[in-house]
Image 1: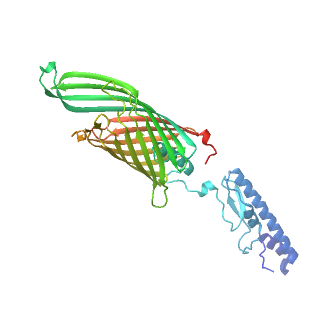
Image 2: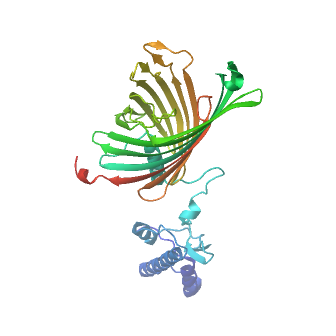
Image 3: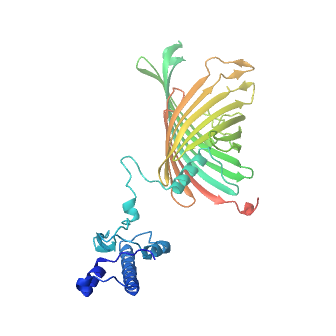
Length: 410
């Protein structure tokens, strides 16, 4: 039989009963002492559970812990059988000596340090996913669709020298300064639909209202003031995107996109043309690399225009570099540098020198989930080159839905 150490209270009792003889306890007395100790441990265990419920512990003791607590444990005679402690709510509690103090989950977890915050991974993923979809860096799942009305305001100011001649100059041509300002209001409707095989169909219908004011001056004298405006539908855009690679280890997500831009823009009766007036075809590759909650996105694109009436707009080569960050569980922040190089316009196969342009824009955006299927994105852009708009502000509202006739298919 294994050696069992008696509690101090039992030793005191046997000492008083035995007197000077100090007789050895019998087996029956030892068994009764063990039963008393087990009963005391069980009572203490019930008290600990009650205290945990009072302080709102989220992780109560399991049945295995309870059974382990009730197993007889051998103690040295020098240790008391019961130790005093303090519960998390300040109430004194009693526990077996040598048992580690159980902390509540709040006490066990360390608070975030300065500059750190806890982000629910699933919620951050939802915010990032919706932001990446509207930016073209992620595709919709099959059977899902999105309806996205947009509203944009663009301000453009341009100052350049011109050769001016009128009756006010006596018919003489002189070099003057032309200062023009344009206010563009551009609402649009964009739709995207998730297709099989990690593909997506895209459709955009823009509308524009342009108000332009032009002042020609020389030597501080205003020579001419011209104000024109126009509003109509712009060029309809249709695109198809598909996923080429899925991110794994060191390689990123890769999405290929092919977009056709029509020439159905209106407003041909004014010197302000709504839309490009040419059929255009563009292709792009978008690369995405995640370091949650941060996502890096890069895009390379090329756009070519079809000849119309002997005129061919310059080809356009562009790239964009951006970062998307989940700043809170349901909100994301974005910062994107967009750069485009436009070649010279060609007329009957010959370049018109000086018509090339460089467009650079820095865009900052913040987006947030406002409902289970609703999303809002606000973007502000600052022009970095003379040919780019001075600044722009765009607001997009996105509503996601299931495509009824595709439910349960594929």
